[in-house]
Length: 52
Image 1: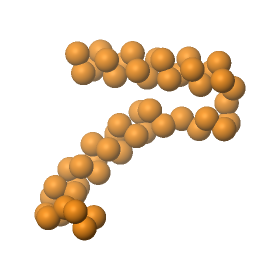
Image 2: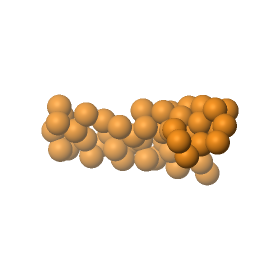
Image 3: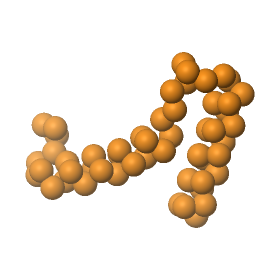
Image 4: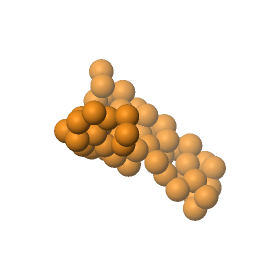
């Protein structure tokens, strides 16, 4: 928080970061490797369609 000069900038960054983090963060320790890779590939494909 100390690196942000204005609270508005911090709030904008944290809202974007939260959406990105929630989209890609998956509880790896709770699922199998195959399931994790499939979910990760699906999230990346969705991200590419949204960004492209």
